[in-house]
Image (cartoon, rainbow, N blue to C red):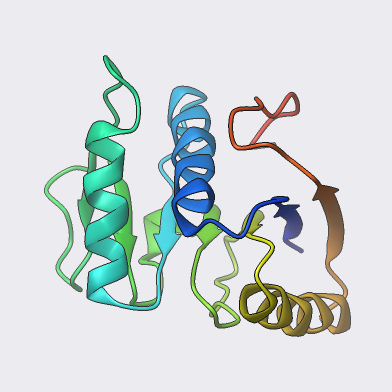
Length: 155
C-alpha cells in the first residue's frame, strides 16, 4: 500500500509550490528514484519541465515530458498529465488536481499544496480518498520553499 505525504506551504504562490516540487524531485533523483510528476495539462507539464532546467544553477536532472511514448532511457524523470507508465509508478509527485490512478507498484505519493483555497480544497478531497483507500498519510505543514526535507523521499 502506498504511503502519502502532503506538504502544505504557507504561501499561495504557485511558483513557490513548483520550486518546492523541483527541490523534492531533485532529492528523489539523487537518491536513485526515477519518479513521475503528474500534472493537469500539457501547459503545466511544460512549466515544470522548464523549471527543472532553471530552478537551481548547476543542477542537472534528466527529465522529459511524457506523451504516451516510452522514453529512450529509464533513467529519467517523467512529467505528464497521462497516468504514469509502469517503470515510473514507484514514486509519484501529484501536482494535478485529481486523484491519481495508482499502479500496484506505487510506493510513495507526494502531494505539494500551496495555501490557496482552490488547491487546499482539491487536496482535502484527495486526502479523504487516500484515507478511504487505507493508505498511510503524513502531513507536513508550513514548509518554506527553501527548506530541505530531512526524511527520505523514497523508502
